Image (cartoon, rainbow, N blue to C red; front, side, top):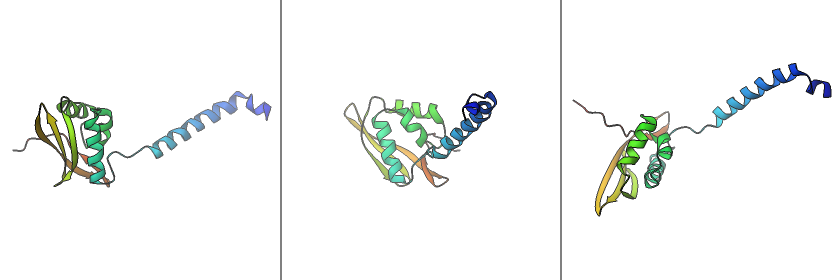
Length: 125
């Protein structure tokens, strides 16, 4: 056994196999983007906006990634997020800024059985 552990060929074979196994396991347990239900999604989006944390919001977005998450969080930067919930096919976030109340709506989409928000506004016409 000692001879095998000191053999370079053994380690050149074991290391790549171990590395590939670790990568496959990491991919298998990686969380899916979005949330299991619209209500859970609304809660997670509200918490992310309340904390002003775009890293927490990014995996909940349907499109756009980091740039859209940053601009969405910046949109509510000076506001206090009061509450949020799922209504009429959208996550509705109620906020207060400088004593004035407002509502921020994010349409909800279903992708591969998971629910995500689409914060990108696409003009129609």
